[in-house]
Length: 396
Image (tube, rainbow, N blue to C red; front, top):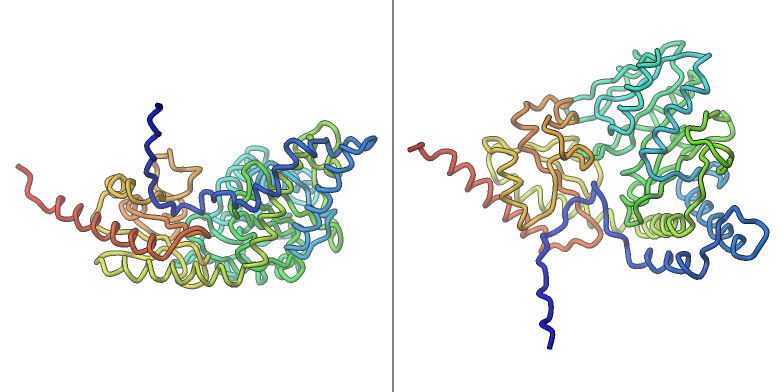
C-alpha cells in the first residue's frame, strides 16, 4: 500500500501586494473557456468564435463599468507592465510633435520609471517629482513642474510598496486645465478603492487581474475616447486587434477571470476593505510595541491591506530569514526582490539604507484570518527581540 504524502507546511501568506491567490469563484468562471468555449474571439465565421467574442465583450463591459468608462475604451494587455508601457511610450510617440516633456514621481513602479528612462535616451525630458515624508506628492511641486511642452503626467493611484493613495482628482484637474494627458497606474487600486475616470480626470489607466484575486497574465489599459480623444502609437504590431492598439490573439479564459475578479471585488469592496483595515491596524498596534519601529507612508491615506514598517537595530536579511518559516512577505516590491540596492520608494521617503533594508511589507488579503494576524505579530516581535539580543552580545 502506497504511503500517503505528508502535507507540506506553508507559511502564512501576507504578500498580497506582490500577487493574490485566484479566488475559487474566478477559477470556476474561467474553466469552460479552456475546453468547452475555446474559440478565438477573432474567428467571426462560426459559433466557437462567437461564443468567445461574446464572453470577451461582456467582460469588457464589466471592467469598463468598474471605472465608469465605456467598453470600447478598454484595451486588453498581458498585464499592468505592458499597459504602462503602451500608455507612456504610446503617448510619447503619438504626441512628440507637441512636446517631449513627461512628469512622473520618484516612487513609481519600475514599469513606469523604466519606460521613462528609455524615452530619455530618445531625447525626451522626464521630471521625477519627489514625495513628502508621508509618500504623497505635493500639488505645488506638480504645478511647478508643468511646462508648455508637457504632454503626459503619470502618477500611480496606490503605491505597491507603501500603499499610499495619491490625490488623483487634484492632479487630474490640473492636467485637464492645461491640456496635458494624465495616466495612472491603478494595478494596486482596482477593486480596492472607488475609481471613476471621469471624476478623476484620468485619460489613461492601467490595471491587472492578479492583484485582485484574478489570474496572472492579463491586464488592461483604459484609453479615453472623448474630451479628449487620446491618440496612442501601438507598441505591438501584427493583426490589428484591440482597435489596432495591441495586436495578438485574446485569451478569453484570462479575460473572463479578470472581469469576474473585479466584479467580486467591487460587489464586496466596502465590507472587505473595512475588514482589512481592521486587521492592518491590529497588526500595527502589536508590532509598534517594539521600540524603534517606524511606519512608512501616510498612516490613513493608504490601501486598507497594506502595512510597511522599518525596524531599527536589525539586519534586514536576517529579519526576513528569521520570519520565513512563519510568514511569507517581502521587504519591497516583488519585481525588485533580487536586487541588492535598497528600495527606491523608501529612499524617496528619506529612509537611510539601513532602515530601507530592515523594512517589512505586509500585504493582507481576503483569505487571511485574525488568528493569522496575531501569529505574525507575535513572530515579528519575537524575531526582532532575538536579533537585537544577539547583536548586543559581546563577540568572543
